[in-house]
Image: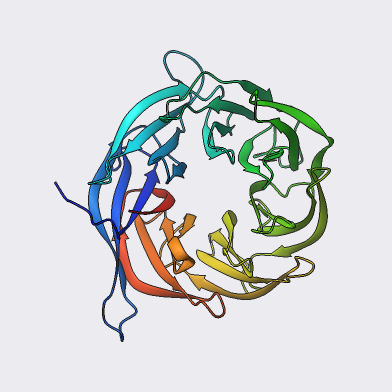
Length: 369
């Protein structure tokens, strides 16, 4: 069995399981030592844990814990997906299952810890619901402290016949929780009680998106003043100004994630902000690219800079590594992962040109060993 050094960077990759994949895979980031070469490689370290369709991962680096949704529709004889908690073996990086809990809805696709690490929020895409699971100090998941069921529909006859919770985001103060619901064209807002693990609809209860937009994921700028929502169905990003006192989002701007010359089919997947707060990245499935925007420091508006091809099909989630020096994107449709350097001066991506092989990669998380 492999051993790791404590100054290394590990990469965990969630997948959809099936004939090619068994669960969560582990890689080691290996930058080229040459001062001339820009190559970066991911050395495969094998299967970290066998588990069903861990399509989204969440890390707690301090406690050496990893949490994964299991994007399934039946668990322990119930019509629900599940959530798995793992401890990270310090010497090898492998995962040991702590326990599993029902996600309290079908098709869980996203999860995130609250700021205290004592609660885990789960978005159930299939059933359009959100659950809160308590997390013990050792990572053990408790029974859900709250479950909120969304209702309604929107205009897309194929994708919006009902609610589809797709992402949960927590504000800096741990007071408000935001849920992108692709089926409703809304970002729903909840007050959060960290003592009881309960969610209460806020006033205002949601921020609307344009009909048919399909809000998928949301991220705050590090200073908490602005938030950005990627709209899967219209290939756009909406910038919001955030009122932290009221938990309210005000629409500032919506821009396309596609260059004008592109006319093919496309859906967006991931959105993330560089830790400096200067740049925003979005992945396009169809155009097969990661797009870079500059973020205006004063008003949060976005300016398109460039797109960078991922060298593969259907780029899904991407992760930004420690010290924000690298970005890795999973090409779900071609079973590859591409790592790029991030230029510290302008945020542009410089792909290594070296692909790691991984079956159906859909979520990538970095951990400094």
